[in-house]
Picture (cartoon, rainbow, N blue to C red):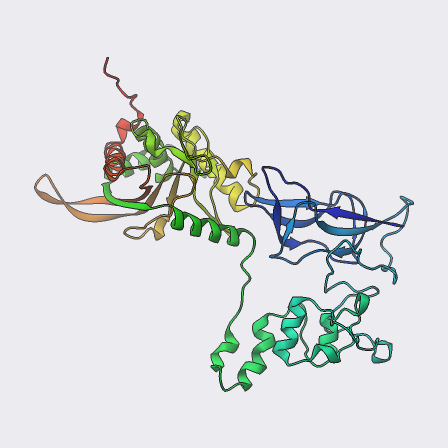
Length: 434
C-alpha cells in the first residue's frame, strides 16, 4: 500500500483557489478512477473534480464553504501496489491523515466518527496535557453546549477531539447538527436572549449563492446604475405571437415574448453600439461588440444563472426561440458548460407572470446594460381619442452611466419600443441612406 496526495488542480483562466461546494466521498470510502469526488466553485463556474486514481480515501481537506488554493493538498488516497487489491474491506487501523493534508474532524483511524457511535470509555486515551486539538466547528459546538474541551480525551489522530467525543461528553452534538438545534436548550435557558432565537436556522453562504452575492455586491458598488422604465403597447406583438403559435404542431413548445424581444433588441443595438459593450476595468478599455451575445437570466434550483445565446442577430426567430430554450434548460439541469455561461455582451431578464409593474435589474458586469421584461396585462388606454383595451408591458432597464449617457439609454429603449409596437419592422432589413 502507498499514499497518493491529490492537490487542488489548476482549473484554468488564472484561477488561484477554488471553494469546496460539496464532497461526494468521505474518509474510509473506496473510490474508482474518474469517479466524481468533490464539487468546487471558481469565480467562473462549478466544476466536478474526478478521482485521479483508484483507492481508499484516507483524509480530505476542508469543508463546504472553505477555499483551497491551487496546488494545496485536497485529498489523500491509499492506493494498492497490487492492482487486484481489495479496497472494499474495512479501513486499516493504521490509516491516518497525511501530514500534508488538512485534518478532517470526521476522519478517525479505525471507525466513522458519529454522535451515536462513541468509543468505549475504557479505550479512551487520557486528555492531552498540552494544546487541545479540535476543529473550529467542534470548538464552537463545545462552547455552545458549555463543554470544557480540556476535560475531553480526543479519540482522533494525535488526540484530536471529534464530534463523537463531544457527544460522549454530554453535548450530543454531531457534525451535521444545525447550530440552531445545538444551541436550542442553551438559548431557552438564557434570560438574556429571546426564546424565538431557538427557531433561527443558520445557512452557510457557499457555492453559487456566494458567487451571486459577491457579483451583485460588486456590481452595485462599482457601477453607477441609470434606471429607465418605459411602457410598451404589445397588442400587435401578442397578435403576432398567437398567430405564429396557432400553426404549431400539437405539443410543440409555443413562442413567448422573450425571443421576439431579443430579436428586436438585436435590431435596436445596430444604432446603439455603446449599449452592446463590455468594460475591462483592469485595462480601462470599453469593448464594443458587433455581434450580439445575449445573456438569458435564468432562475435555477441553485440560484440565478446567465447562459448565453451567441450571435442572436443572425438567428431566425424560431431558431432563436429554440436556442433560448436549450441554454436555459441546460442551466436549470446544471449541465451548462463554462463556455455556455460566459461571454454575453448584454443581458435580458424576465420575471414572467411575476413581472410586476417595474423592476430595477442589476447589471451583469462587465456588461454595461440589462433589459428587464415585466408582466404584460390588458389595460384601458386612450387610443386615437377613445378609450380602448390594449395589452401593455413595461420594459425596465439599467445602464452603466459611466459609458452610456441617459439620453442614449432612453433613445435605445424608445427604439426598442418602436420595434415591439410595430412587430413587422423587426423582420424588415434596415434601410441605409446612400
